[in-house]
Image: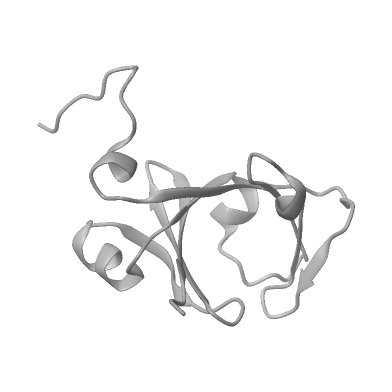
Length: 125
């Protein structure tokens, strides 16, 4: 049995694995201010650039290829140093394989206990 985390302890992904919180993605059906469109994913995103907490709103086209869990359930996103290492060593259930949504960024989505989790790797300059 794995160690039970106490109330005052931070999650294992932060403390032991070195992941960094990046944002909270929240699906919505409501048009939000300053939306930007990702045509390859067929969804709008907004809020992240101005949120001090990293809240990002996501509004999907009806024919968006994004996994249904991501379209319906808020997700946490973490920055990781090596996306391939994390996916190959953490026994994670991958629901969206690694892909580049924009230049210099690779992401993958995993599912843990019914919740979507995004892992983000930024190109090192």
